[in-house]
Length: 373
View 1 (spheres, rainbow, N blue to C red):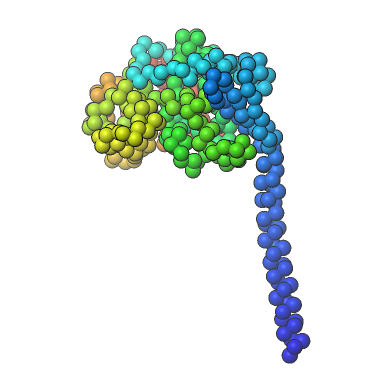
View 2: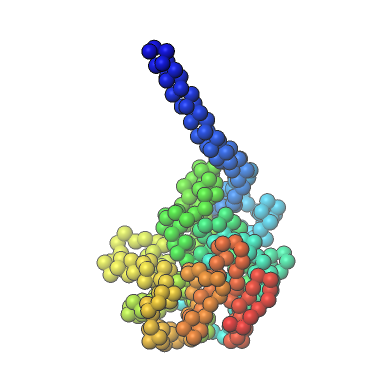
């Protein structure tokens, strides 16, 4: 009897050890992967204004690096920037223009929902003559619109942001323009919602000893720039916003200038003394019927032709260009009055860019070919 109990006990111990070994076999690769990721991650730079000096933080091979008294030579040598502290100072000290309406712009392009897919963005811009082989602005006096959602999902968000920032500066010098609009993912990160932030940035934050929110704080170059992004712009007959203009939006009679001002002064710079009406407006603009989240154009029976006619008439436009809702290609809807430009670049497999030349609309493919829309 004692022998039988001993055998059962030994058997139980044996099964227990085997079970532990099985668990370790599954867990061990994940542990190794996490350790390798921690030791090999490189990310940044994040540049901050402290007092009257710019300082940089970044991660190289899993270790935090810092630098002070930044110079143009250092930025070029370390990061290949083509930017200077003087440019940072100028953009951080600028006041945003809320009335984002532009006329007589015969040539412009719209790309949307990049989500950190840097190689695809570069390929599209190069193959359609917007940037040259050295990643510099080559679009002359034309305009480039990035219709929201650089942030979120992908693991090369920082590279996309710095390229867009540099191109914005270069375009201005050439008489052109880069418009980077506020998307729901920019709004989420700037208001402390990190659900869709790639784990790389969470890991980099830990290595640098900061909270993810500090990556884009108001005293950082990129955070200050993000805070000033408009929610709506208009280029001639094209109204452009990340998600869309809902019939409920139209009832409030909000123009481009008013919306952009509220996002900058109230949404991204919360005021504790905001009135009840202002708080109600903020909830609307950042909700499902607002221009950052709306999806009604892609849901059957949500929007009528009369709704669209009224929206376009109010904004004196002929087309609404939106991203946010993923499609297989740039897609005209409602007889071309709505153009969906989220071509699923976020998946990293392909995508398109909308090109408008003298009123003619084209789908621009990754290989540089075009098709009239």
